[in-house]
Image (cartoon, rainbow, N blue to C red; front, side, top):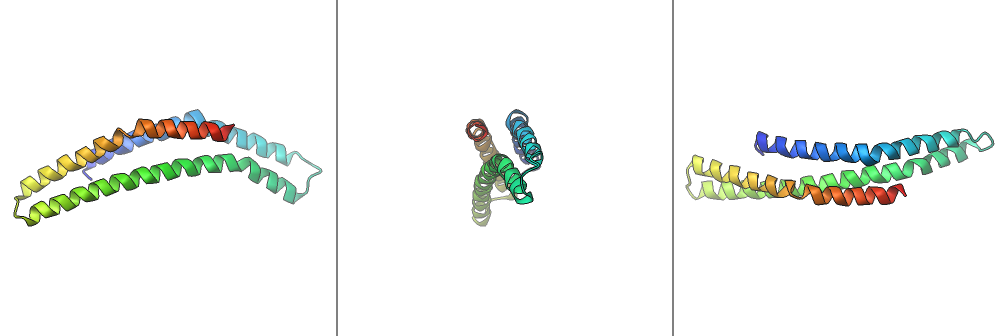
Length: 138
């Protein structure tokens, strides 16, 4: 993918992740640490019970992080498939005897279209993630 297009995607995804981290993940981390500290305060519990308590405290955050990671992987996979399709089109055009400039132009337009299409998916993906993170936090 062209560097400028890659930078556009990276910037948009980073902004989305930072927003999710600020608004949801950070609060979940705070709850996890407070919960874990409470587990450690249980002086009558066995070491095993304290570890089990801490694991329970960590579960919502682990689920949230897994959810975000999974969504980002799916997004990346879809974008990669789209750009691979562009590569195939460019190769086919080149193999048919087209000049390098025409192939390069097709590739730039195609990749740009992939990026635009996928950036337009970010708002709905963000909304879906926020709803899921809120339900985990409950």
